[in-house]
Image (tube, rainbow, N blue to C red):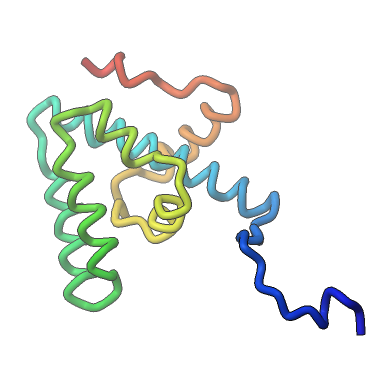
Length: 137
């Protein structure tokens, strides 16, 4: 047996187990969420709250069915309450933290973007042409 196997010491650091594939998927998910956030902000600025009601209904349904933990529910609900502060709202949705990356993988924003909008967001990101939030207001 090797010495490192025998030592039995616990590492005081966390070994990152994500690869390039996971990082690329997270990047694409973040781009899609950025497009979702911009669409929600745009609709809210026009006085249309249908998307917001849809997201809140999904959150409540997932919580009630036990498909979402209370912490995740509170996080998304709190973010939705920031919709009247566009910069803060978008920043919260696309925050680059392990927790938000995990939460975005089980997004409550189902059905907000059409397939065409989703593909367009990914294409615009690959070209470096995502719209700026400031163009909405």
